[in-house]
Amino acid sequence: MVNASEIHTLMAGASLTDEQLLASYSVADRSVPWLRANFISSIDGAATHEGTSGGLGTDADGRVFALLRRLADVIVVGAGTVRQEGYRNLALDDEAVAWRTANGLSAQPPFAVVSASLRLEPNDLASYATRPFIITTESASEQARARVEKVAEIIIAGDTSVDTVELKHALAERGYPQLHSEGGPTLFATMIAEGVVDELCLTLSPRLEGGSARRIVDAAEATPQDMALAQALSGADGTLLLRYVRAAR
Image 1 (cartoon, rainbow, N blue to C red):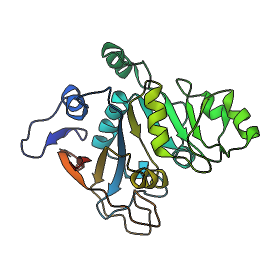
Image 2: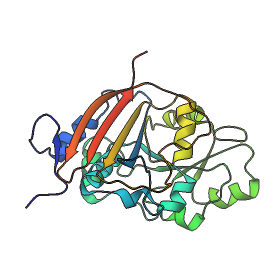
Image 3: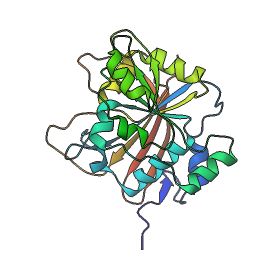
Image 4: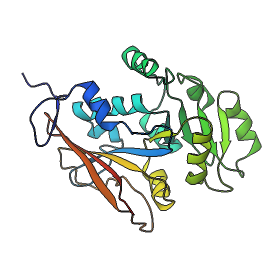
């Protein structure tokens, strides 16, 4: 029977272990600020199926998704994605915790939720495995700040909209240089426009979606950034797992 979560290099057929995958996705110098974005797309460019990215998921993608979280110092996600994808009761499993602590990392990576409006549910934030960060703006209302400050640490990054350059710097300054961003498309568009994306891990789900689903980037204007293919893996289920890094200038 074929293991649907098996992952192989494209050139050689050998199946990769979790340790090999972790090594292949690791950044050489963890002290240097590095922002990795992670997305999934159908082969015709849809970023969602029936409204969520999880609807496109495969066994191979789920395996790598979990391993990328294991490698992260902090997980960055937009408030819209938190609401849409149902981010609640988030914690790494015991195996991941053991690996992180053995490798000098905190047991659980904190989440950094990006929200200019602070339209968040404190009860949901309180359920996270570790106290989250909330990245917001100077213009956010004092009343909204007071609601979430009871369960999260507020970081101000920008005046009326979140500045992702400040976001990246603020988290690195607090001891979280390895940022793992899980979207959504609007936040990713801002990150591209502001030049903070160092890496994109893009899963191509082996399906044609059709319809009018969003892309992984949602922006009115193009802000091109050259990237270089660093790695290509294939899942036994037909998934293609691509890793791109910022092209040398």
